[in-house]
Image 1 (cartoon, rainbow, N blue to C red):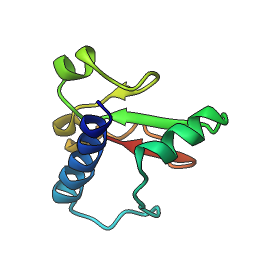
Image 2 (cartoon, helix red, strand yellow):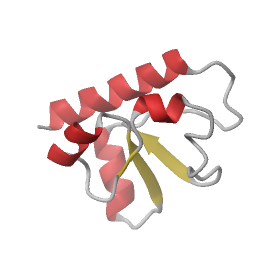
Image 3 (cartoon, rainbow, N blue to C red):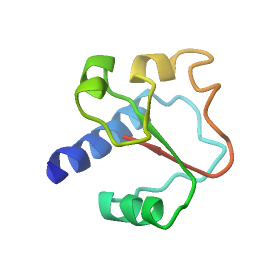
Image 4 (cartoon, helix red, strand yellow):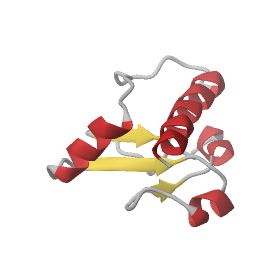
Length: 91
């Protein structure tokens, strides 16, 4: 289970990198599952976005995550609801 989530996080990050056409205006870094869990456990506000298909999201996702499938995220305006401040995690 843990490996599957970590693999999904890595895949999501790779796919976002491949789809990206501009340099992001915010710093980009990679975190592991343990670090994300620690942040959430201590009450850090994190916007968690699951980029998988809706059916996969419904079947299994991180509690509190929002679903914005990768094709929608890549579309014009697809990222409009994502905060430009604070921590945003894509998986």
